[in-house]
Image (cartoon, rainbow, N blue to C red; front, top):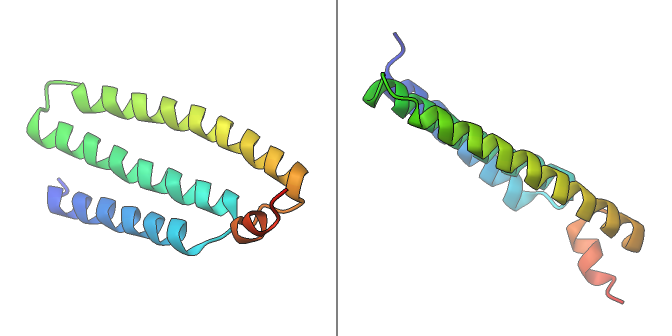
Length: 102
């Protein structure tokens, strides 16, 4: 059995990689992927805590399924916003889009 500390270390590592990607990148698609990576690291935490603290219950699994559904809806909305921004500014670079105000 894998110790919970290893799983939490993996989750924290994925979260900080996602945070680094979100803060340092200027491409909206890459920022969206970094945000999804952070949400998936939270899902790993929910499943790990559910397995080790409450092995007979499914609360962590239900939270994970809810987060996956919210992430899918968020990705659909974000991609539609990105498409509209691309149509208006001809770029998906955050810095260039803020400079090209109408």
